[in-house]
Image (cartoon, rainbow, N blue to C red; front, side):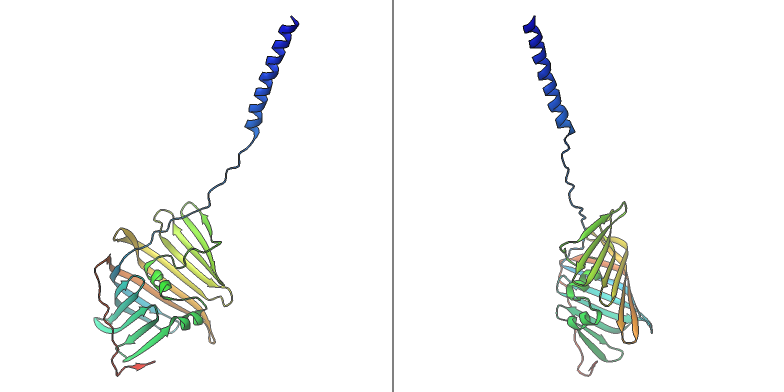
Length: 254
């Protein structure tokens, strides 16, 4: 009898121990480490790009509206010709060393170095920056400590490059950058880019409309320069394009 009672007691103790173990395990919470937020940005990839666009240049004094033919060789050169009412008025060549703008109307030309432009705006401006801005690609490569905030419609990617804060707004559906803002903390100089009217070019979406606004301080006050682009045609490919560019000797450098 006693042996039977002891046997049942042992079985109950064992059962209680097992239940206790399982209850103990069930109470333990295994920490779940969420993966860091990530966003894929769709960028235009190409050998050569060419297009036709309407460009509007506007500052605090005047506004100019021109038609432009644009050609780009990736990571190398941007070539443009400008015309007004069908009459060629100028051309521009952007390469990794400098920017050259020629006015056939005024018979003069300008050469800008990237160091000069960077000093003027207190932003780091180089060829890669301008090409990315033209195409709607990521202006600043991946940086340490960048932060991503995701909502239902858009992802906000915040970056820091020296004294410049960069904010990218990416559409969750298209994975395209729709807005970019660069702000320099020392001078409060600011660059804003808005992209819209995305259409297929090759196998990617390309912004047929874009507005670039630059706000920077001068001795006379804050200046706002705006460039608006409206493409009527754009195509990419690997077929080599030509970039003819010469400056007549009689033209004066400004």
